[in-house]
Amino acid sequence: MTLWWDSLTLVQQIMALFAIPATIIMILQTLLLLFGLGSHGDADAGGLDTHAGDIAEHDAGESHGHGHHSGAHDGGLRIFTVRAFVAFFAIFGWLGIVLTESGMGSTLAIMLSFIAGLAAMVGMAWFFKSAMKLQSAGNIDMRNCLGKSATVYIPIPPNRQGKGKVNLTVQGRFSEMDAVTDSAAALKTGSEVIISSILNNNTLCVEPRVAHPAMEG
Image (cartoon, rainbow, N blue to C red; front, side):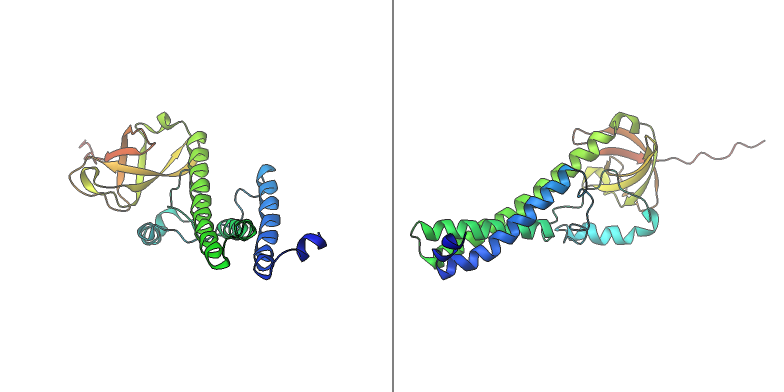
């Protein structure tokens, strides 16, 4: 190990200082995930969501979903998380060492390694987002949602012009799911809706719940 370290240039040694700790952390994270200890760790809890609009809408509807766990949450790509930074430094460091070892100039090697590190961050964010969506979709039989009542959590645009979110209880679990509507009017937070159909991407199609007047005796 000492011989290998001494054979590196100053630039390579700096990159190794990034790459080696990041690789060790990445291995530990992978082991934790394999044993089911890291699936809900706080490493990603503070991640910056690239869907800023969803954050604002989420905060606006907090009073309607406080204290409940989402069953099918889609918050956009969380790029700036611990996992993403670990991936960045690992790719940046090792690729930089390889490129400079091949004879490439230090400046160009650093630039290419930096770009590759950013790509690794985005790739890591996409991977975990996809994994969580598959996990959520796999836990719930979407057909059990049909005909159920739900409450709008994030406003749903009219005529399928965009997605909102609804809260409902299905299979004994309180869940938050994407939803669209064919209604000509937007469905506001707190509105009661009925789930009329399920779209191919596990998005619910909902319609306003019609209040029936009480029968007169």
